[in-house]
Length: 173
Length: 405
Image (cartoon, rainbow over all chains, first blue to last red; front, side, top):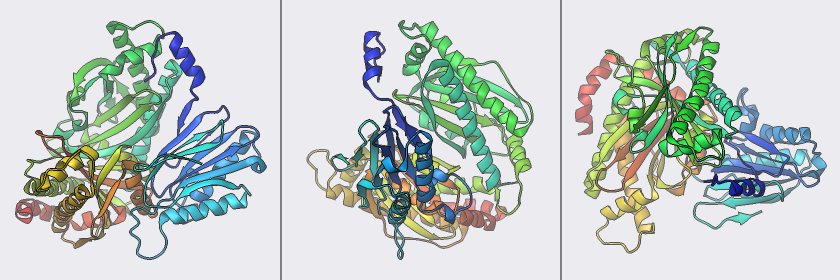
């Protein structure tokens, strides 16, 4: 809880970056050093892209591999169109793909009941990689797979991606 | 009486947009940065409405509405946060009670006008609403009485949860429409007969699930000696992307199975960590040191999850007269939403929206709560309901006692 008591609240506002929550199948972009967060990544993947030059950063929380499998709907829900929509939004904020760097987390294989074929988590990861590659955006950090969930925080100011799990220490990518 | 998936989806979207409109109005007025976390339509027993609010004090505003839709709607939030709200309106001063109350009323008024107007615009008809009434009550009493209807024991409730970012303040919007006008409106909006859902059978299905939950609760009691009651059983409808938000972000322990047949899907039995330890120790012959969750606890939870799942799934199969099989349980110990996420994704490969069947059990004596959450394939659930003929359903209701004995 913030403390609303004159002098203190002012300094709190100045020091703490704005925190922006990104829900499932949503994306958000910041140009003023906000903290972008998303929680409860199981087989979903959080794709964080930041621009080293102009400081813009964005995060998308994708759920399924490809929009081609399903008619219509929300682009941010899928790995392929989700990366696209995030790149477009960053470009609209003045970034170029040359300066963009990506960090990705999630894509767990937990609770994968499929007896044959690969899990949604690994298919999501494969699709995210492929789409980023099409844009020539390098992946400079990743924490993928395994059998546990994750929550992530992207510090737009530094490009650091902090990954938290229920049963282990946080790591910073 | 049939509605279709599409109109359920549309109505859910409408409630969601209404809540978003309400939240935007508030943000403009107060600078409060808030987001609508989740919106769902739930069908549940009249007496169970607002059960999730038990033990908390609320303030808010209530309206009656009238027109193509009739009923009541409320916007409520935790009483403790009234001062925070008033402070957002008039920063600086320490707000007194009267100011807090008028702040609540003002915010409520603005938000709810936005909410109702959104609905009226969509259905292209007038919905009038009464002036806001300030309310201050505890638990489910803060909600208006669910509309009474001799023909329907269960009611539809539209529920949105709004989260105020950076503050631990949650708003809730509940809308309780009269059953008949709502059902008629949903039928009017329906485009196709292809994916019709017989609402009356959904009610029957809910009743059956309640019996299954009771059986699962009996199993818990048998294994642990802890008197356990089935609390609430409800069926909700929400976009697939909102499904993981049905559980909290905290850590849960439990089991997950995939079930196959008509319908197929996933079933989770989840305990919060404290409950998991309590319930597991009740099953163990020896006292454990410390209150950490150990492998022994997890093994006990696995066993318990298995018998709860069996009771529940067998209940369905009997009622639906189909065969429903399930995989051995997989133990999970992880963030709640991350547990549900891969299951929602599996189901989401074939559908945009999902039915979520939720049951809860609780005890008075000790800290122990458990949730059963089922995520059936929507098309198959629809087929199963179609096959459930209402007359037989009535017979089954009598039979059900024997089935679960």
